[in-house]
Length: 470
Image (cartoon, rainbow, N blue to C red; front, side, top):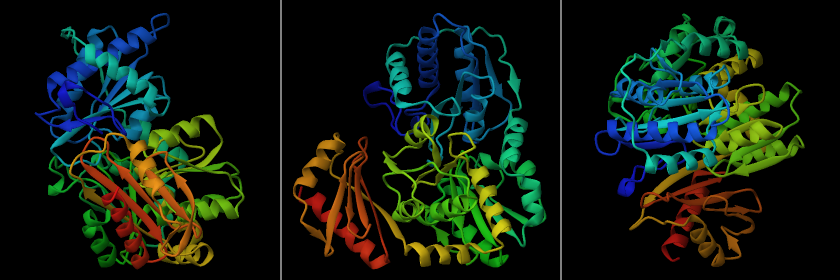
């Protein structure tokens, strides 16, 4: 995620993002559209040009930015279809498996309302880094063509998306069988655009589903501090569970029947254990390096291969496309499993968790108590530190700190140091801490997981000291 320093437009963890009217302007959108067109024209020089689907979220002016982008791509001789309504990001990924060669979404995902952005989709997932790096090079040299003035074809893509979701988890069946109420928090995001089709039932309470480009004054990010309304609604309605989707509806968060926010390090093992209970999955478990040890312990107990990748769902998607992967998860609330697109999808995950409640007949807190009993307690905390200046090279930062590590941390031996994305230190009892510089801003993200709030805090404090004295 990066804006353009010195006019350079770069695609970060998942696309390009910038502040509207400062970094994200009509001129920037035209330049990116032209760069993308130049890249595609070169790439498909000897074959038919790919068709392009363009979607957008509910942000301020997203529809107008999407039209601008579509007009430039069309002026370059591509067949472009524009969504007639705001559209969930996973719906655009889906379109790239249904006849469209490339999908583009105008969205800044979970960022606050000042931001907008662009994500590029291909083969049912985010375009891999090799593609976005090439697009960046073309964007740098791009001179936008003049739009032809011919209106771009428009289509409502929501029915195709609803049909896809229902082919994976039948929403009407699951909702009808729920033994109680569930609360769905759309955080004013685009997930609400398909809510009528997917979550319409008398036992579903909907929160924040109206269109508000200011997102009620918060970032539409499904993290604990933003989900107090959801937790309160779960308690008020004595609901079975609460779920939340982020601004572009690809991320998911869970609140238990007790009104407790479940971290992704707690939600992932619940889902994985349920998936494996079906007995037909034998593939690899893949997770971002910022994820926890319970999934690792489940993989170990089930004798399944286990792999960690850098932060960014595109790395998980790549593995899902090229290897036999049962389950993929990232710490920011992205979940995917075998049999679906190699893409995170908030609505699909929400229905899957509701199906879990129906099939097991258990509450989330009861299911999680079983996980804790079998695999141990997880207390995960993420803490971001402001730095004096950005750390441009993550790898040399990691190597420097690795060199001065003590033999023991909190009385435990260090058994593993992982430098694929910052520095992750793993102890002999699976506890871990990750230090990950932002790369673009003066920010150090630290993550840790132990069996208690107190130990996790100690580990984060130690990480801070290590960085301070590097």
